[in-house]
Image (tube, rainbow, N blue to C red):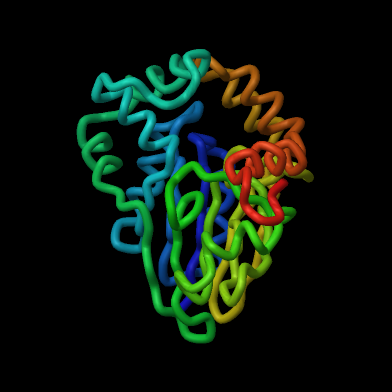
Length: 253
């Protein structure tokens, strides 16, 4: 069985199209969409592309998807007020069937894969969709979160790839297709079966940035410049923020 795990697309249609083209050249049996298709500059088109995969794809809800739907439903999203206008804009782009589909996405998907054993796909951690973990965190912190939940856990959320163990469980972050927080620029994803292969697909980020700027997305300029042309390295900052979630845990001080 061959699986492609695509996480954190964030409405970046050019990046998604580049990854889907690569997958078409090296076909897989299943695409796992690991959450946070939303928000981003081309949300409806990105959803259309992924939904066109039909039964060849399974979806997980991410915190960005959940918070966008909170705006759809008129509830206060957990995102800071300065970001809520991006959610509202994304909300307004979605069709009613898309809202219904995203609302039905589960928090995780489990598979049994030859050579890999039990595999849990979740957005952030098995516990929730916004907990931050990085490869720099100690085993003392990660073991209670991951150890024993599956042979392999595939996650995303931090937009940075890693491959490490937590106790007896292998934990792999697929990275971000559309909004990487690592360099070089590109679309990061994961291919599974029979092994584990962290992938990066190159595409024309300059042309993609211009396409983003032509959208009506309120954050178009910042998205084009920061997330496409000059992706930030967020490892140290995210590690510090993530550790603040685990104050008092052994190894987290």
